[in-house]
Picture 1 (spheres, rainbow, N blue to C red):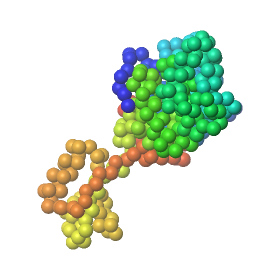
Picture 2: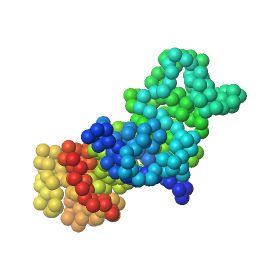
Picture 3: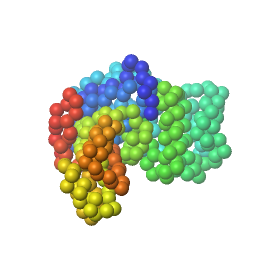
Picture 4: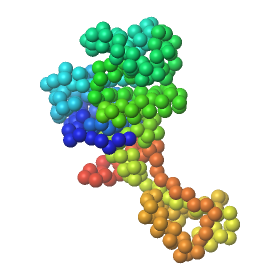
Length: 329
């Protein structure tokens, strides 16, 4: 992840709204993405992630009542062509034409960007090399593996040298190695100052890549912040003490207060947010009571816990700074 930003956000949208008939897909969504960062939009199927990407990338229009949307410093409503010139989009489904070669796919994109023949060939060659596709460049794209097709798809997106890239579930269906390779490519892009707007259903992916994360549920932002900030919203962190001696376990259970017992595994759980200060306090407390456990482990909520807590069928969203408590249903 990177923390390098400019003063002006790459993406700023207020009150995104979109409905289809009586189905509200986006219900007043605010988004701000600093330049040169990875912003990840999480949410279950049907939450509105792809709709948000389509609006921000000019593929569809927002409903009346939506506030100002600025992409790369351009007003989306009044200067859509300037927005299109600043962005690149890699959708859920590959835009690669399997009937032609990887190189021909790249040259086709160069033509669409009105590059000269020499510029197009130079750009195609450089990007194919960058994405480790040079050896396969002359082969039909239909023969490529899933990971190769996704790399080619992203390479095609970069032909126009966009500074803002929308990646809509870019690693869906990839094996773990291909997914990690794609993560490396995304990190390289951001290190070059590119802004990445990422939608994903892989929580590990958001945890690995995103500077900030927003959780979208039923068309509204349920929570947003860094991964660590979101994890702290969810209760359930604890320090677990495990014993091998039943007598020591019983003594500790009596000596310690506010613990949860597990008699079967001879373990005790002490509520904790996992911070260094609180862990030191717990260790001092154990020393003062004479408790010596055979094993001590710290458990903190992960993004899976956050996701399930915020997108459940009936969820009370934890309080956030400057935000009222609301029920997401």
